[in-house]
Amino acid sequence: MQVELSPTLLATLERVNELSKKCVLEDDKNEADRLSREYSRERMDLLMLLNAAVEATETANTAAKG
Image 1: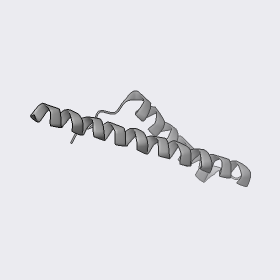
Image 2: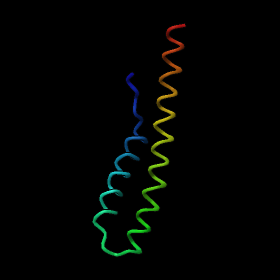
Image 3: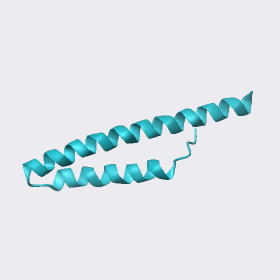
Image 4: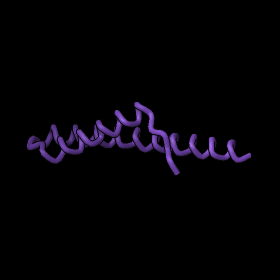
C-alpha cells in the first residue's frame, strides 16, 4: 500500500529525527530531559498523522473498489 505523506507529516518526521539526535548528543541532563519530553510529544504527533494518512488511503482504496 502506498500512503501519501502530507507536508505536515514530513515536517514532523524531520523534527522527530532532529530531536532524537539532539537527545543522544546532549550532555546537560536537564536539557536532555527537556528534549526527551519534546521528542516524545512530537513522536506521538507523528504516529497520529501517520495513522490518519493510512486510514485516508484505506478509505480511498475502498471507495475506488466499490
